[in-house]
Image (cartoon, rainbow, N blue to C red; front, top):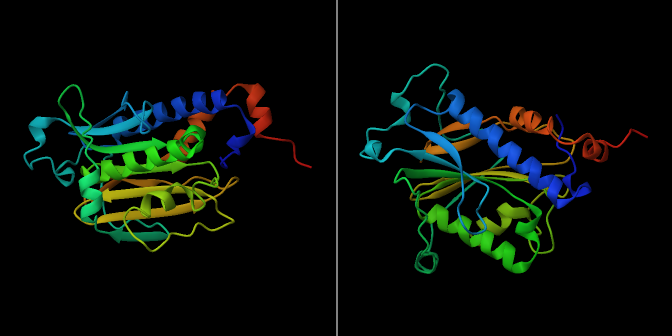
Length: 251
């Protein structure tokens, strides 16, 4: 199913779809994509990376090095070794300035260890300079804390992020600017939060099919998130009134 132009609908319509999509991704990950010791759930995390954030976690009792996802061969579980096949890749080290100014620690109430976050960007994340800055700071902070990150941005750049959300995030790591292709203004970006931060980016556009994108479990190990099939499943619940807006008749 081609990506729709979500700028055509109300913020409430996008939010409703956003929640459904997060749920479908959670179901897919927990339904056999993740190794046995990992699980995903929607989290109520305060701040710009919430409340509709999907967290990937592993129980604390497996945090002693025995939870290598390659050791689990359950059913259809298929973990991959980096690098993923995405068109743009980059890596960088965090400088001391970044390390000193990021201090927030995100913890899960049950005590289970968070290993990754998945965020689907909403218009509100770009609605003001403060909102965008807060989102970027929380994303950088998460990577510093060792949380791998997947960001899906189906909204075009604003004047505050002319090179998209990845360009805004990556500028915190590297002075070499990322340039988003003008014909591909939407972004799928996956980040590995090892000692050297790595980014794997796929620019895309309205009308394109979504692709599977990597979500890292360890620095060089990932599973592919089925964005296309989960998007299609979530879209089935969009009210017909708004589907007619998102699917204008052909001229």
